[in-house]
Image 1 (cartoon, helix red, strand yellow):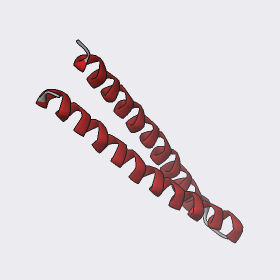
Image 2: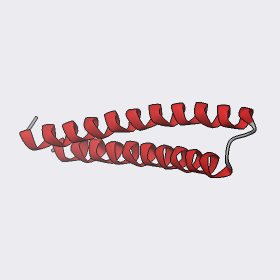
Image 3: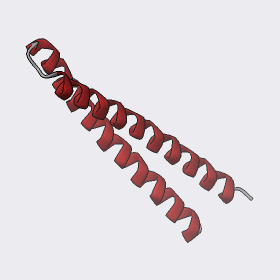
Length: 81
């Protein structure tokens, strides 16, 4: 495997790691959101903020995983003679 392909695969793995970290953050935000809903006395702005951050984490995690998959596919295609 060339160093170029190895570097691409390393970048893909870094993106996957970041995607997992964001997915973990989304899980924590989902739990916070559930708690805020159950409380019933949470200010609307706080609930809206948590919901927005949850959506951003979920979207970013999916985007990073997609990028990692594309990099991996590119590396596979580039290494095939």
